[in-house]
Image (tube, rainbow, N blue to C red):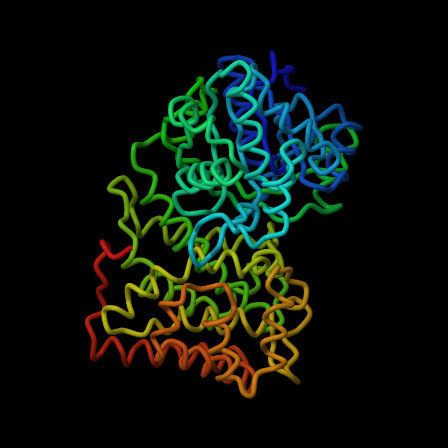
Length: 492
């Protein structure tokens, strides 16, 4: 078993599978090589299940790396404590303010940052945000917890700290810093802002590892390998990547010994991840679920899904990504399809397709607008939106299937209301772009994109996802014959 950390210098918000198979693993490897007080206090948002299990297992668990050729189990051992934020919000603020804590890392998914998709600023219409702005002692939102913890640090000892977002939000560090600054302004904590500018860093980062949901199969594999009962083993693919800015106000673990990469410009890596991997992943999930496929490998195995995935990746996302010089893009794309075809991992379409209203708001608008301004309707980006809508808010009398119904999405009730009250599919899609609060209004001004999306929804409803994907392929070829397919990368 791993040695215990020498102290607790990291608070992590979001004690889910991804953190436990990513940041926790990198941190454990760094401490194994160089030591240090970099133990992690893991903070779950509301659920006690992982917290109770970790307490019952001496804060240990297995990470089961799975591939078609076999699996291996490792034990990170980087946590020194766990807690539930909803049960002790004041404790979370105190932990962030602890002078021994030097870094706060965050994995709460895009939805957890409580910003408006239209403006990118704090969602002041959210009742949770309003509550946190009014209650100084017990914030429940992630931004509220960080802001209140920072304010307490500033007003007590003033030790510097780094807030490192590890979610799929473009320019995640800058976005987090801007949201925290706005929260403090709106909360009347303007006395903290000068200290914030001097003593807090918000580095951008890109994280990448496919981590499916846990299950008994992985618990059994971990328990067998470790000769100890493990009820919370984390499955993960062998591939892992972490790229970040080396902007840390109070030091950091030697994550580079575990393979982390530091750079002065994370954005190209972010765009590669959010668009090429995540954006394509979404289309695979929605088409696969609509075709009755429960997993990403089963979906990718269907030629119509793979064809649509390659088309949206190569023809529509890739021209909007400034690929880093250090990346062989052909190898990267080939590796993506190997990862998506990892049948041993069994990543579920319902998991990948969940929270699409927040995910697609990060993935679709900028690439779509780049093409539309260039006079080209991106057929597979339109198909992605249509397939998403059919999964989450299917038109009346259309059954998207069990895998689509299993997708969780905060916008489902809102979009379902639009679908139920719409006079037609076209009316529904038009209202999604004007009243759905997902995509910026500028996209809705390109009527050809809106109408094309409506046509794909209608095709899926009438003839199924295979027919819609075939039409997208035909239309893309037709556009390529009469338009320049190249979209300058500078338009990202």
